[in-house]
Image (cartoon, rainbow, N blue to C red; front, side, top):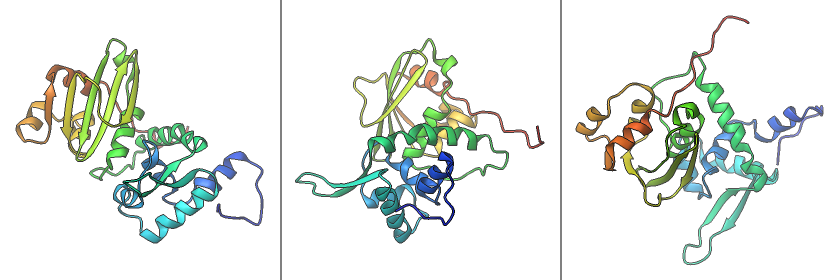
Length: 223
């Protein structure tokens, strides 16, 4: 259940923080935005959280109506966690939070990203004006994870799973792709190093890499 306070604040934002403001809670939501996951999958996506704390956060989110637990049909039979319809509404919050955090002048560099966090970064740092004339489909392969990425009419859609008839298939990792997108690494160099593989149109991949631009760091002086 959500944590209880002796003083009840009628502010809806305060209530929202009661529900998802505990450490790791929003990261659990982040890992579920592309679909259900097993406990072990969540642990892999958030490696710094202990099993006990992760279990506690899941119980709290379940008690709040944000997450549900269910058993997959045979032959899988695994228990998975997934967001409720209301829980999925937190995607806009997570994306906005990511955009805000990416402007932090003290944001650490060189950290690790989970595949799902990388997929969400594509949505949060998408440059819609740069994509107005682009219409293309991509399949992004990050280890065992697959994401279908579609760009059309200045919009981007990202979903878990393979893409149907993609213009290009991009196979890489969670370190290389951010370097190509945001740090100026050259595609040809990454290909020579074996850090990225391309099936299909290389030109489509070059166009894809130009569709993202993180916001400028925030000013530190008071407005």
